Length: 173
Image (tube, rainbow, N blue to C red; front, top):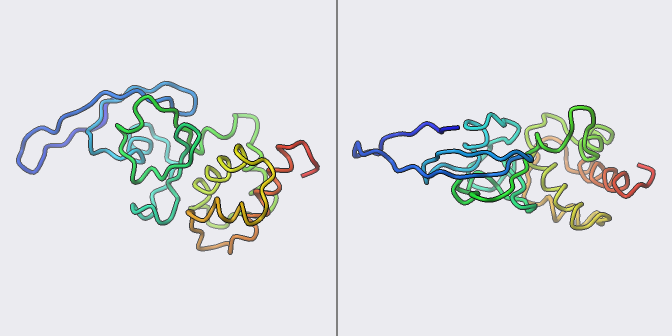
């Protein structure tokens, strides 16, 4: 895969760098400009448009993905920084036949309205539940504090994460 290259303001060609990234379990090789953001590689280069772009300043969290299991706001991470890393996007949560428990929880507990923030919320919540399978409400709110939602008021999002945690622990969801 090759990402579109541009010329600099002086007309000189911008250097490119070959990177290798494991995205949702598949190894991807790309030629990228050193200034290309990870969110642009994911959306434009790989067609993974579930990662949303909201603010480009790390304030909203809509672009959150997991890099080596940790939540990262991809609008402020360069693609070259992901070289050799494992990246998981919202597209990598479910299988063709089954939703991830977090996705089910958001559905069951009405944890979304417009859905713009949902991919970032899901990825931040996934990282939390992998680290702490039984978080308190305060721990959930803290883990999601870098993700803004303008629609829901957060209460149902918290309930959705709790629902998913119970299901992942094998309890009655």
